[in-house]
Length: 393
Length: 204
Image (cartoon, rainbow over all chains, first blue to last red; front, side):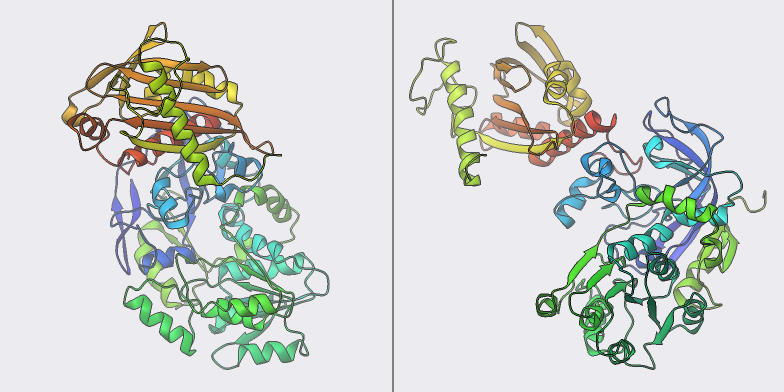
């Protein structure tokens, strides 16, 4: 089959690789009809995620049709149209039973690697490094999915791929980011990063009762899209973010702040320049400028929500601010499974149209150009959907 | 409510308990009357203090009785222990274990169960053979309905000696890591029917 594989920093190609096979009676094989490139794929593409190897198949936002199912698969069957969360749940460990599926005990075959990195392993992820399981990803014609009963969600008739696809990751990620920020009526919420996750976070914040959302980015088309959702915006290249937030809230500061940027923050601030030097020198510190700024900018007693991906260590962490302002920090990979039914209902009710995040629909074979376009933020590239069977469709 | 305990001491006590039980039962008889079992006994499978020891613990969302039943059927163990080729139950608590040895040459030894408390504990030791080893697995209820705490302790003859070395080499790597990944497979099998596989990475 054809699949998007990693070739080295800043390079992917589409190659012919072996077809996936059923490996356990709980598996299923999905023929992929739509798959997306995620901002977190760019962290791997740019070489910032450990244990990514040449030849790895990328992709963790995918959906399609079940074409083969193992003997123990009961809840879904061949022919079902399904979406598949990027975090892999065994369905039965303590964390999965409690709805915290990204903390699954059992789904990472390389748990010992994640144990070393994290202390305790978290769930396996599709197409996202060997420390997170080494599972071949979904930017491919076919994907083997593990524990299909727990991980394949049937898509209702009448919901097109473009509406359902983002339930695999970025819509639940944005929603969890807003939910864990504990937004109360009347709150002002500041959101760093107006990429696809930021776009869903802005809408989720409003749905959860935010009075006002202030979105921060530097890319004009992203700021424009944020304003279209009702957010006020700050261009951090032109304005002082902290002072603007303070003024906009008449000295209170935002009640909740959300970092939708993560480890590759851009800024001209001195702390970020130092972080970038260390990353380039392979000293392996994440660039945490946004997180530091959010902690500085948030009002007293506020909540700092971090959906953005950090891979390892940061330094210059302003713990004194956290202590003295009495802040709460909430984070986590997304417990996608917990949110799929609720957010699918919102789509069916017409409360949100996730397809509007899409800027490009391309054949799978165009993946190398699509990655470059996404990382360079050209052609107003917001979100790319790849079609593995474009010619047949 | 249990009183707070120093955890390092707890592990030490468990080790002593294992050592004592091995020594006490490996001498002249099967009674438990031997007192002061801290002295070395040449006949013990792994005399206390001489062995290399591994202790690993996992919490499993499954009742202790079910975990015990799976484990007590020793012939199940090759399903979860990647370096075992087979375990044959010989009856009367005795069994024959065959490991996938280095270079594809199998290694085999006989073991006997020396403590079998249904739902709580199984202890074993090797009998004769070239790979002196002993171990126990205990099942205790985890606090707050979090399932069952599984704790495995294993000892084998000194790694410096030829015997111990041969046992360690059976595992082809870090024995602690091997036991840990075996127990992970056990946990996943009991909780979710099967352990995680990705089809790409070589099994550890």
